[in-house]
Amino acid sequence: MCFASQAAVRLALPVGLLLGAAGIRADVEITQLGNSGALISDGETRIVIDAMVVEPYAIYAGLPPQAAQDFARLTGPFADIALVLASHRHHDHNQPAFACDFMQKSSTSRLVTSAEVIGLMREKCRTFMTTSPRVEAIDPQPGRPVVVQQGSARITVFRLSHGKRKYARIENFAHLIEIDGVRLLRIGDAVMDPQAFEDAGLAGLHVDVAFIPAWFFQPGPGEAVVRAYLDAPLKIAVQVPLDEVAEARAFLAEKFAEVRLLDPLESIIVAAP
Image (cartoon, rainbow, N blue to C red; front, side):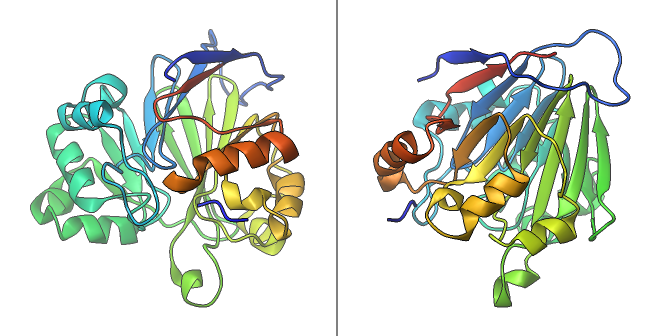
């Protein structure tokens, strides 16, 4: 087997307190965007990750037409974005021309990502990428994650291997997003290797929501990685090829009933503790 509604669902999860946070907690809304992209918001701080994906790429979907219009206009789910994150350079996670268009239209959005992502975007909007104070390259290393603060959110960025051989050279980031007491983990296109998660510093990490590439749930090494490192109360499967969504949904319903697979623009609301 291979994997390649807009109603909000409210979930009350047994989430823990965010260290160092204070004040009133707000619910956190997660909205599915193109391919594996997502909007994460507590009503105060709006963050998108791997969301600058508008057109279909290879076997993966882009945005529905209305959402593509919202992207172009910076409206709807793309309005008032404080922070733009991208896990790695591949075009099913960040499309440089669209990312450039978005960042240049926005007057406040901050882009924090790898030098590889920024380098590809520089080919499309060199002046902006080399002069804007809203563009920041980070370089987390094993044992040395980078912490990014944005409004009510704290993001810890880990380097997590993309794969072996030629894929090992790709800068792939995992993001731990802590916002109003809810801890969410995204791993980009991580290799299904427990040692890679150990090296990244993800051992013993307790999270409330984990976004997991769908192939981790197929028979093989991914299942053990999920149990050891990604066993969150809410698991969301991402990175499913467009023509395999129905197959993936049926497979997950049978084998992993607790795992959610969201439709484009579908939202889940996670209640703050």
